[in-house]
Length: 520
Image (tube, rainbow, N blue to C red; front, side):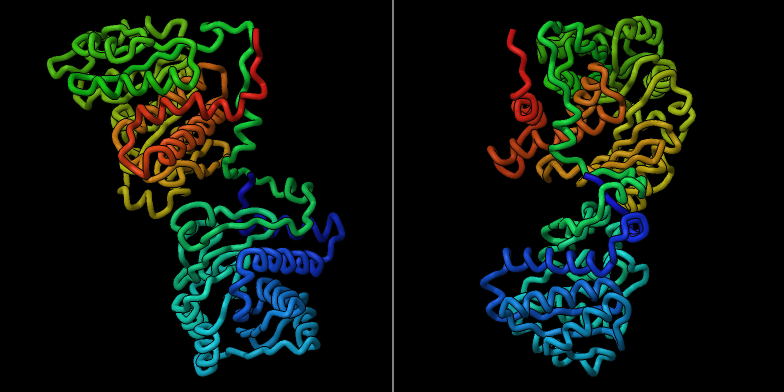
């Protein structure tokens, strides 16, 4: 599903009017009526106490006026609080209609006009926030700020039209005071700021309504941002040919582990196997090779020369280069360690390996701010940092990364020329060409050791099966999160294990492939 920015929505609206001769008044009518249907469907009993509608000076306020008239016609007691001196354009047309219907309107031009709103909000069954939409770019102040406080203090459910007033539709961050909505009804397409944090917390339940904008108008906007969904997975995930064999589905080399961290190597290999790789070989220090072999019987192992600290020695470079022959993809980093020798080893392999590679964990720390290693790599790279690793790559703090995750992940992919996967709540994936994707799957129970190792293996498996680095990253992130959601449903919200998430993957795949299974 596409995600739009405020500028992209402007292009779409303009194209609908200019290229398809659709009057904006019709789009406003469709928006208001669609929102009304959702309000009636979700809050029918609450509406017996009446509705209070706050309308602003722009088209968002015009949508609110259509909602007011539509609910009034359904017999709902309706009160409008207008935060402007006059309505213009399409909003002006709808104001005249509302006026002719005799719907009560109270004008809120300064704080002295707000006592009535306070009383109405306390008594209302539902409050509709139609103050400001996607175009807001400055903090709400004065009478608007007080109105937001009154609405948020009310016990009535709040429905925001297009965006909760005060929230940036592009960043998901508050622009000063913000309405806390229980439901947001957005027009035509979801907005980026609605599906990333902290915007998710303000939006409440998100509903997208079709207001009649042609698909060609949407295409004209050239949107490059996706909200990953089941439809994307169903279209992208391939079924297996009946004549396929283990060589058909790729051989992944997992370069991982050190003394005391054999589990990271096992989990990464497990992720690759459960995601359908035909073969998996773990290259690890000789000291842990027996442990890895015992821990995961379906994977092969190769021992690498180690240093005194039990991690891979730089002397193992030649051996590792020979192991890469015939492999379709590689994963490097989980549990490898951070000593000088192994850092040198990782940096050289990242730069010279000719196969598609997932660069994760300790390998990201080894790269640090030296982006030329990734930019000059011989093969495609997918980097999978958590916020702390992203901060080291960007030379900033984790707080800086979390403050604007979209900007951070875009910078990561631009500087590294790699597909960047910024992990966390609502993981964001970015490509150097400007493509962006937000993942809605996953849950807080995934905040546990080993989850990232599993994800790296999953993405590596998709690379080995011939998926593009972009599709491999998107499929890996979405399905990994979906598997974790299924485990959480069965076992509880937290306390489950990374290996249990991997075990759930085949069942998740079945949801998409079951109707396309070829029987020999």
